[in-house]
Length: 209
Image (cartoon, rainbow, N blue to C red; front, side):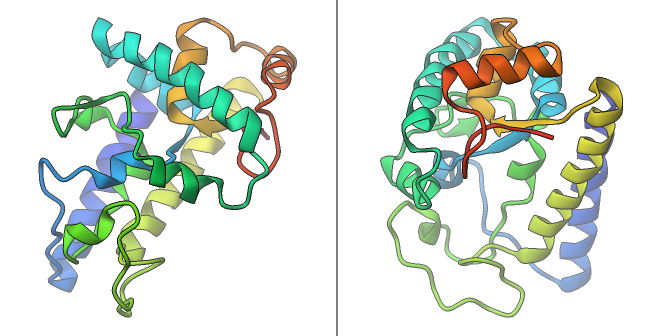
């Protein structure tokens, strides 16, 4: 999906320039994957751009994990601590392979903005965070790359709205599963499908805007 690839490239370049300007070195490395336990929100355009790059093995894991996460969401989408509790479950992203992102060049924008210059051990679920520094956001993550990713996501949402007439946001694995199964189409049909699954709205459920 050209629009996603354009935003992803621009975001990567902007983050790289910011880190160089500030003289910041990130401690994130290959094989460091605690952030892959998180609840990742993506848009329909991001999921559509990622889907063609999945292998058959990845698609199979997405189908299984996507259904499981939709079931979890149905029960807990209004729980204010749901993302935190999910993180502590240490359920890896279905696209994680041998401690590495299996779709790294095509990963969502939200994943690209999660960086730290602290000890990566702080990223592990349940580990206490150090006292935040001035350039950190929540916990020990760098706040400017996180904000850059959010701005890139918002630009993508605008394009999605122009293309489809609405924007669909939700957890990545479930969203990929729904697209893989051909369960998303028009606004009303998508709303009805997500409503029937019990995952529409609420504090952390899928959003149609």
